[in-house]
Length: 613
Ligand SMILES: Cc1cc2nc3c(=O)[nH]c(=O)nc-3n(C[C@H](O)[C@H](O)[C@H](O)COP(=O)(O)OP(=O)(O)OC[C@H]3O[C@@H](n4cnc5c(N)ncnc54)[C@H](O)[C@@H]3O)c2cc1C
Image (cartoon, rainbow, N blue to C red; front, side, top):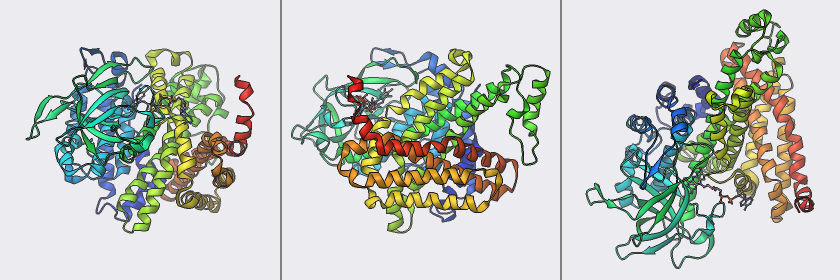
């Protein structure tokens, strides 16, 4: 089963769940209208579905053989990348000054989801190039921008992001790669980086590495890190390629998943030092890297949504085909009149004739609903983060820009960690829906599961995201940013209650409880616990999940309300209300338990050392 980009769903989530409709209506992107947005999504959907999706399994099987320092990407991948770049997708949200199309981040986010659903190992490369472009635009000198941005934006060259070393993973401050000042103002880098995505490949003629390194007189830790641009090929004065720089891929890793994305060990300075150019200021590299990482963290969250969407599509298709046992029609949702909807009737017919499709079994339906609900909730959280980035850049008054910047900062760790956690969970459920066939590679369900597993690890592990949320994001504006967000959630829930529609069931009540739990846990974390890091950190991961369940559930309810407003009692509204209700009554109900975990985590974690002895 291949992937079909769910363009209508994506457009709906963007406009009605994530608030992009308001950005357009306020004219923050000038006269950009819904027609252009829809046309871009449509074209992206076609490219993802027709060109990229068929390459996914090929990439998994072929991998990226490494020989004599060179990497061969899977058959058809290089051509697909070039066609993708030529179509202008790489520079969708990049500044017009450098050849980009200056379209909204939110629109790009929707496209990033589609590239990664189609082939995650493909989408990962451009994701890093886009992050590098952001860092260079924000922090690079004019000369560096002129030399590198046009070709990075067009996709003629790709970028990499190089932080990790054997002793420096989550603890970036422990890195040792060394940069020495050269008389001409450039730097010479020596050292080794590991796990570098697309560190070497054959997609493009040049590869632009963004590398963190330490000057000889740098202060220890993260305050002594600088960011350097290190090209694979140096440039002549006219911009053409000169000789090879002193950087090379030494080897590649053999991995659980994303086989078509080369993961390289990189060596700098075999011949005396790789030439690097400072981005930003000396010892201020972490600030630049954060520009890259924030963009990349949101995009990795989108990868979680992407893999979840693809796994859900595949599981649904399988569950409609595979027949086992007899299901009663009790297993099907009824409409408001108590009738079984038309779409389920064919399956029911099959049930009467003999074995029925497994989608008719309530337990399978529960798995499929969980998959769909988690995917859609994570999608609106990610898109809302991108919308906040657009507002932070474009809002007309400074206070609105600051508030939007804080909103994006608050939501980024939630978008990254929740969406990737559910990406893994949904892919795992996808395997389960397939039964034994899920464990057999032929169906493709197993590839999604294997591919998904990295998402909770790279771009800052999900544990690190939770710590970021609790220690750096909750205190923004003295807790004002998170309180404003919770207020907004309450506004939506008031509208759900006011709608007084029986189809919502206990949606309003369950989500109110979830938001109450979120509010109490937030207040608790913003209280004296702030001065006791171990107490707060022990509950960071359950807090992030609590946040996401309250937020995701409320956003789904908001989408359902919007669907009801637009389409009256049409099928789409009924489906969205049913999904919001499922989320509230089955998933958001975990919130009070998570609140308890947050508040009691430290005691139970610290008291349990003996259990690990
Ligand atoms: C396929 C792949 C691609 C990658 N691509 C890139 C890339 O392109 N560029 C790049 O620079 N890196 C890349 N990485 C590296 C990746 O970002 C790191 O693996 C990741 O940041 C975790 O670091 P680590 O592996 O050293 O794990 P560790 O830091 O050793 O973490 C191990 C465990 O301890 C936890 N932990 C560590 N410190 C703390 C703490 N302070 N508090 C609480 N928990 C903690 C972690 O959450 C984790 O569960 C890639 C890795 C892989 C596998």
